[in-house]
Length: 132
Image 1 (cartoon, helix red, strand yellow):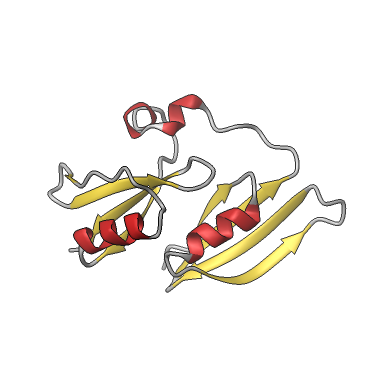
Image 2: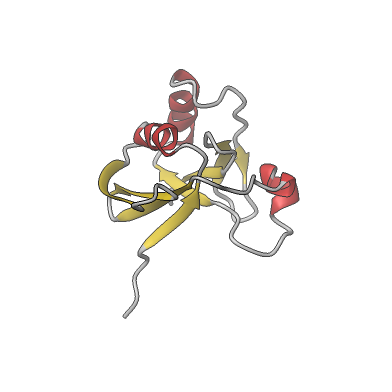
């Protein structure tokens, strides 16, 4: 009856954010802007996954606790979203070669899957996790 529809993020600069997510294969497919310019909404798609990007002219900064996985996980609320990969080592190479992050440490999670975290241009945590 239900299926996963989308994830939404709020960002400082929608153009910079769109270019960041395009590196992972996301493609733009829909956009909207308020007549007064107070908000822009961009929709990106990766396979069946939709990423909805809100860019408010007036925004509140990301809280300090949300900038680190160690301080963010204990806080109630949505934590991050993850991009699945077939090979975590190849994903790490991709991230470093494309200058997305140079501080990549692969870890094995409590459920046995290898993963690492990066941050998008807004400081939003994105997990890269091996499928399987």
